[in-house]
Length: 452
Image 1: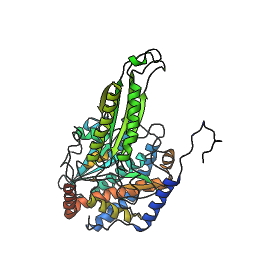
Image 2: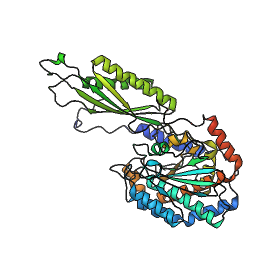
Image 3: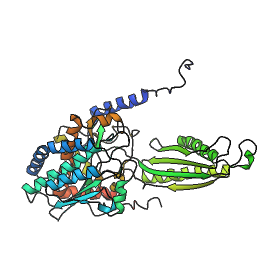
C-alpha cells in the first residue's frame, strides 16, 4: 500500500533486505569454503622465517607511512607528497628510485636483487578520492607495498644470496577514475615478458579474499547536436538534442533485461539545454560501461553505440561518440598458482583468504590493475582492514584507514606480498606453473589496442 502521508520532498531510503541477504549468504559461505592448499614448496623455510621477522621489525615504519599518507590525501596525478614519502623511505634503506617514471609525473620505480633469475613486480597505489580522502584504503596499500620491498631488501642485506632474481617496485598513481597503470604501461612499464609476476593487495571491509571479480571499464562521452527553434511558435523547425539523450537513457533501461548480472552501464546527462522556451540545440551524456570479461565489454560497447546512433536517427540530430577519455581498464585476470602462495603466506599471519565466489560477484568494482594482469601474470587479493560496515569509497572506510585493524592489514599485506615474491624467486616449479596458467588463460593481450 502506498504511504500517502509521507513527505514527498524527501527520498525514500532503499529497502535494505537485498544487501542484508547478500551479506548473510557471504557469511554462511565463509564458514565452510576454504581455498585449496598450495601444491608448491615456495622459498626455503629459514628464509621465510627470516623474512617474516623482518616484516615485523618494520611494522612501526609501515604503520607510520600508512598514517602519514592517510593524513595527506591527494587525488589522481597530484600525489607528490605520497611519492616523496615512499621514495624517502626507500632511500633510507639504500634503494634508489626514479620519480616521474614512464612519463608519469607521480609514478616511480626502483629495483634491486641479483640481476639474474625471475623478475617480480610489487605495486603500491596511493591516490585518494575527491571529497572523502582515502575511502578506498590506498594509504594501507601503499604502505603494504613499501613494507614488502623494504623487508626483501633487508633480507638481501643480511643474506646476499637470498634473492635469486630481481624485485621491481612500482609506485602507481591515479587509479581512482583514471588509468594510471595504463599510462605507465604505455610508457614502458609491465611490458609482456618483462616480469615473471606482478603482485599488489587491495584494502577491503569484512573479509580476506584471495580473488574477487573486478569488472573492466570504459568511459564514454556523447554529444548530440540539434537545431534550435522557438519551443512554442515553431517547435517543428527544431531538432531536439535533449530528446535524443532521453531516448538513449530509456534505451539503456530496456537493454538491461538482456545484460548479464555483472554488466553495468551508468549514465548522466551533463548538458540538456539552456532555456525551456528553446528547442535544445546541444546535449551531452557521460557513461561508465563495465563488464566481467574483455570480450563482453567490447560487445556491450557495440550495443550501447547502436542505441546512441538509433536515438540520433529517430530525432534527426547529429551525434559524436568519444570513447575512453581515460584509457579503458580490463577485468582482473588472477593467476591461480600465485594466488595459492599468497594464501599460504596470509595463513601464517592468522588469516584465511576466501576463494573466488564466496563474496558475491554482484559487489564488483573496477581497477586498472586489470590492464597489468593481461600483460604479465598477476594477483590482486583483498585484505581485511575493517569491518563489513566500512565499504569501499565511503567515509566509513576513510575513518577506518588509520585504526588498529587497518594497521594490521598493512603489515600482514606487506608480508604476503614479500613472501609471494620470495616464493616465485626460489621455486622453479611454481614459476613454471605461473607461466602455464597465464598462457592457458590466453597469454599477453594487446591492451592498448584491444578496443580498436
